[in-house]
Image (cartoon, rainbow, N blue to C red; front, top):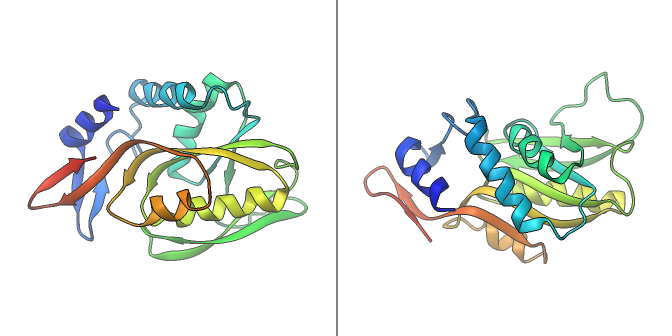
Length: 190
């Protein structure tokens, strides 16, 4: 998505540890009009998949998932990183190591909302190491549901996450695929 690549070049910032900050429009402050275009693009890519539910992981994926769900007219379910007192009953659980937070989380989804036979589209802001997506896939499989694809806003294609996830057979559509990134040389796309 050329417009996304242009926005990353204009507004994105490369931080320590090869972290790409797009917090001015994706995952801290959300440019709603622009992210609606992103959601519409995910709809174009996956509209023939008969999706029942969109799944993401808290927190950064929630806004993107909601803006995407409006085109599919389906609910958004997000995996929580901590068990809270307002989640009653049984849960599906998986471990996920966060690249950004350098921490391992137990992610959970209530069994009340993810069912056998559900056709699930995963939406997330970044794909780097692939851990979040693989954890979400674990939850989907544990429920007896079917992952029909993953829509990713930005993929760091120079890391191994995309390969790891695609090797599971999951269709992954990344709207911007970064080939290389450094403070010295900037960002190049595939």
